Image (cartoon, rainbow, N blue to C red; front, top):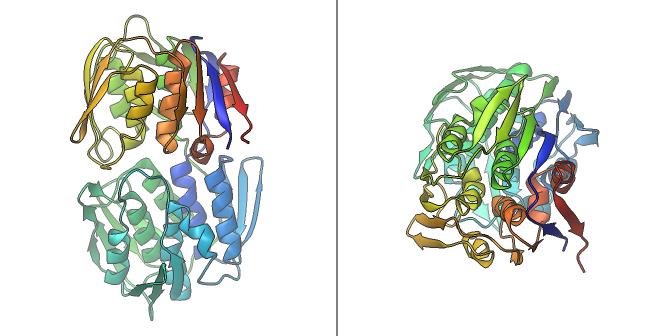
Amino acid sequence: MDSFLIQGGTPLRGEVTISGSKNAVLPLMAAALLTKDTCVIRNVPDLSDVRFMVKILESLGADVAFEAGTLTVRCARIKGFGDYDLIRKMRGSICILGPLLTRLHEASVSLPGGCVIGTRPIDLHLKGLVALGAKLDIEGGYIRAKTKGLKGTTIFLGGRAGPTVLGTANIMMAAALADGVTVIESAACEPEVCDVANFLVSMGAKITGIGSPTLTITGVKELHGTDYEVIPDRIEACTFICAAAATKGDVIIHGARPEHFAAVLDKLREAGVKVERKAGALRVTRPGKLKPADVTTLPYSGFPTDVQAQFMALMTLAPGISVITERIFESRFMHVAELMRLGADVAIEGPSAIVKGGKPLSGAPVMASDLRASAALVIAGLAAKGTTQVHRIYHLDRGYERMEDKLRKLGAKIERVDGE
């Protein structure tokens, strides 16, 4: 397995451009299953998850081309079941269930996997599909779904940790071709969900309430092809902001939409990081010492769980005590033990991590456990003295496009080392 070798202590300086959103493009690719026409999706990041989703679509019978950030998908003839081993390895693959069911009236999809960050049940996906008129069975590792035709209804999608992002996208896609009106109450409001809704509208879907907790979808008989550009990745933007702040750098970030991560910017400013808009871009600097800041992850528009690990890495450098509370996933502190290898002082108390920051970090071999934990370890390694080797960076390749190349252009001393 490949790893990153990082020589820390160099401030990041220069300009970086944010890629398209991983969490938006995967359900957009699934939405292309809803039409026989050609869909062109632009600003697509070249990620292992995207390549994986291409293979899944191809296993369903789709024709897919991916070149220079543009995906062309044509699903003229598809089948209702794909490759079991492909689908089970990626959680985002669950998004094919709704489109397949509403278009073909039957689907068999293996139960999905993904990062090991705690239980992420798909019960709300299944609840919504049953409410629309699907009959479901789970056997042999498959979700087997059938319907004589989905019918619109009112569905409440709130869960224990708030609304379901992928579940909202899945039910919205299923409802787009259902008979009648579907109202999703407690819908997720994340920008990525809005992007899926806007993509569907560009295909001819009728959706109102986009960006609100109540979505109304009036089913249509068919959808057509479209040409659409994916929103920039807000999580990648936040990651590079944290990296710039951790190294006391001066970085210009292009392509980010700050309105998509206002809660993160608020906490960064509280921590002493200066983020200013400059000619359509963001300039990140740290004029003085970092200050501790408390964070609680919440559904959008609160502080995103996908930035929790990166912010914790930054807070290990802030003199004082920061309390970081995770309210979305119960096992998303797996990066803590690895940060401690670098010299961080962090204690876990229930859903909270108590960070006693300000002690210098020193390089060491560390092991990534999931996508965002990997990013946190890279940030810490960039700020640490000496050499840090981050193993299992295949996690990073799932969500960051050419991260090492972008960091090198900012002056970081980082290289990819081939695995054995």
